[in-house]
Image 1 (tube, rainbow, N blue to C red):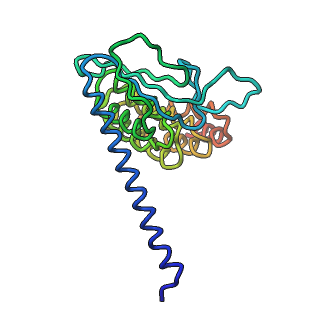
Image 2 (tube, rainbow, N blue to C red):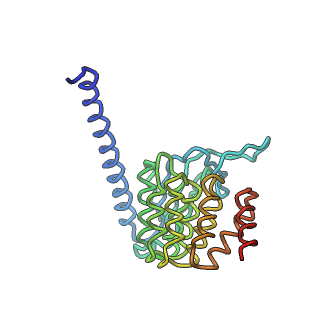
Image 3 (cartoon, helix red, strand yellow):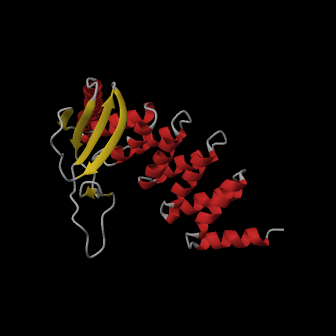
Length: 261
């Protein structure tokens, strides 16, 4: 027997699913629009602005990504994020990110996209990180992490695991995954460390990223790495970061290792 509230819930569920699907389509379409407009410029600079996520502020060049808890802080605007993309011969050669401040005038080669949707901006920037080479690939990562209402860590994990990406891009992706990490992200970092086919520098960056997680998340993973990882250099790196944690579980592990026959 179907209850009245169950019948009422079904249209609501369909509406929610339809709304989410529409949002995804709109974000992707907007990101493609950004890509098309950047591609239309042969030489010059593309500028765009978008809303910053909570906790991000800046005074132009200097950017903070976490809320301050001290009694005093310097002047820090909560947005918008401003991204400047330099283009030469239709190739992206440089990306700069700012929070707060204002654009400087006086250039006649600027294509200003104005304010764009933050999730679409993040999606576009992550596509650059995933596909561009050189500096542009690495420099696209950071501003993507600043965007409001954008969940970026799944794409960042994919970039971190992609050995066709520049090493600097992968290390940057690992670092920012750690900043946004919850349980799912920390599992991805552990997988990155234990990937025997991966680059050693990237694995070491992943160990550092794990050390930056909350203790209840990071310390158990570091202990597993010490106990099970086949590479002595990676085990040594994990031991080093455990030593910085002041966690009793780390002390117990060290005692076990030192007393081991």
